[in-house]
Amino acid sequence: MYVDPNRNTEAGNLKWILPYCKPDLPRVAGAIVLFCVNNTMALIIPLLSGLIVDRVIVQGHVDELTRLCIMMIVFTIVRVASRYGYQMWMERFGQNSVFRLVSDEYEKLHELDFTYFNHTRTGDIMSRMTSDTDAIRHALSWVSYQVLDCVVMFVGALAMMFTIDWRLALALACVTPFIFILTRGLSTHARPLFFAIRNSLAEMNSMVEENIEGNRVIKAFVREPYETEKFDERNDDYMQRNMAQAYNSRKYMPWLDAHVR
Image (cartoon, rainbow, N blue to C red; front, side, top):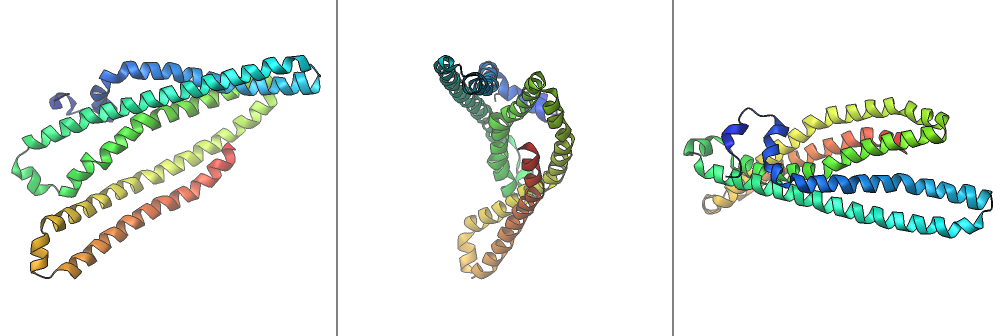
């Protein structure tokens, strides 16, 4: 196994997943460097646009237009290349970490006794091996740098706006508490909804696996209509759970977008 399972018995979520990530931490360090380059370029490019407006259009220094345009093109290329680089490295980091995790999960399943499998639904095992691990990969490969990107860009933009016009910066800062309240409400309501979606998916996976495995028995006793009705109920429950999550997003996201934009 890649990680000793006994060392993670009492660990929290972050401490539990960290040993699977350690071999790729140098790649993460490189991705952070490219991330800093990307965000620096993202903050500089609007300043160059402002210089074009102030120096070329307003003050009439046409001779500076070529230099400023070339700088914008170069900085844009650097930003795109660095963004591509750190996204690819973070995706590889997430894929490698989940590969090690799933390998340990599969090996652990072979060590468990029959009691575990008698008391654990097959759908739960399938969900943990597929959708749950994919959620971990998504968090490592995408959510991690998106959270960091939002924080860095917000602080950087606010600092830059204070250097340009403190009144405009204060106007932006006044919106921040409303964004925090809306985000807090969204996450508080979304957490139980996501858990419900996971449980509903596990139930549906269990039923599908049992029907596929016992297909001959079901046909022998002519139970197809009954099993189809049961599946429709599970499928409808899974749809309703996802719709509840969509309604929760509909409740908060328009207000968040309005305050951000």
